Image 1 (spheres, rainbow, N blue to C red):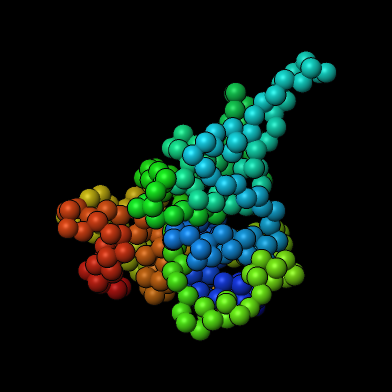
Image 2: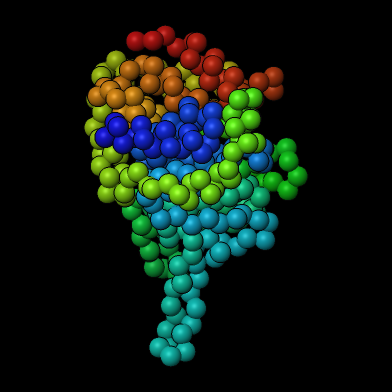
Length: 304
């Protein structure tokens, strides 16, 4: 399994150049059965990364461009009256795919954003009293532009918490950017690549990630991190139990990618910024950035 995961990372790295760590974090998120939020300025490869992951993992995906006029029915689907049968028939929306690429999710209104809440948490959609299960596996890979840009609607905390991890890509280094300038279009390169995994193989990898051993010392360390965010006045509010479960699941997936059968404290620290930064707010006006809060958290809680 480790060689297969390395192949996914290697091929994705040939598409999104110079961003191997971001790719590993994104893959760990999917192995942990979480949803992924990719945040950065336009043009750095957010959509390309999401496209590459879906393609290389062999998953059926649909891309939905979120805009200010998007309606919940555009995401979930709608019931339309069939005159021949005399009944309403449900026409499924793009959420009924193994990967929903929600592009620029924060350009849609809160009403349209909220259409994803039940799907992301329960992996089902309820409409007019009927529950429709979503495909298995089911992932939401969303991209969003920074909140200071014109025409964006901030994601509410309730929806941010549905994303297991948030990553940012950043600008490429000089060597990677030169290769991008001289190379072929990334989407054309990706279209010629053969998927490395299948949905069944991915489900197996997720099962293996869930079985990675975590010692009592790791549980103690995780609980100490959670407790510190709840007791320190540095934080406006602490991390929830759901965040703690997600942290352990992501650390297990990170260990699997590293070829280990047990979680190390370094695995917790490796995924903590991506799991916790979008969930944390500073307790004072002087510090509101999640990244700086996570750095403080890691320094303040001793290793087991």
